Structures are given as structure tokens and as C-alpha cells.
Length: 95
Image (tube, rainbow, N blue to C red; front, side, top):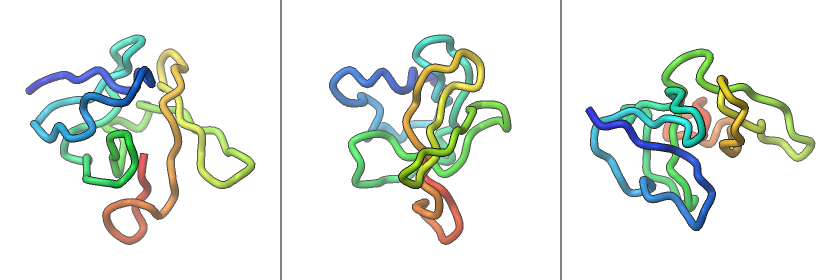
């Protein structure tokens, strides 16, 4: 199983269209964030996931405009947002 570094924000994500089995980790500290099992196709320019791999994989802070700001649960590296109820199935989020 491969390990993919996630969320560099430097000109797009090389793993957006990558669907091989593996674990997505923080680009700063290597903390496990998402499994390829929760990855799904989405129109956003970044990889999309429906859930984190561990309960403590990310920290979340409310944003004034709706979604939750998501950071690495270990080092605080900014990862993007959690969009509630925008996942691949009803009731799931999109990270």
C-alpha cells in the first residue's frame, strides 16, 4: 500500500486523479489523514474524501461562511475545509 503526501497547495494536487490503494499523509509531518477507501471523484481541483482515517487525523474550526477549516491533527498544517453534506452519499461530508 502506497503512502501519498497530501495538501501542498503548490500548483494543484498530483493525487487528485490517483485512485490506487494507499494512505494520504500530511505533507509537513507525515501524520495519517485519509485512506484511499474514502476517496471519491469530485469537481474540485483537490482530492476529495468522505472521512478521515482516524478520529484524531484532523482538527476542525468553524468558518464564518459555512464549512469547517481543517488542519492536520498533529502539526496544524492547513489542509482545506470540510464541506458538510457534500459527500458522495447523503449525509456524508467532503474533505
